[in-house]
Length: 80
Image (cartoon, rainbow, N blue to C red; front, side, top):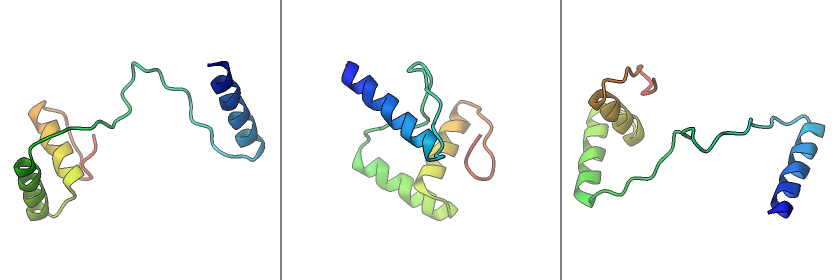
């Protein structure tokens, strides 16, 4: 574990020296905004068809659909 921490410190140090952006640490309790969902192939296909009919990506369609299911406001770009 200490080797991993040492490697991270080294990467951050070099990135800062090179003027690269270093992301802030994220608490494991915070959501990354990504998750993997396994679903039946037929449902996946239907979601893809509906997204195409709406002229949006599958990701945008699913985000908007999920947001609507929990009354979460979504902008025109499919993001809150």
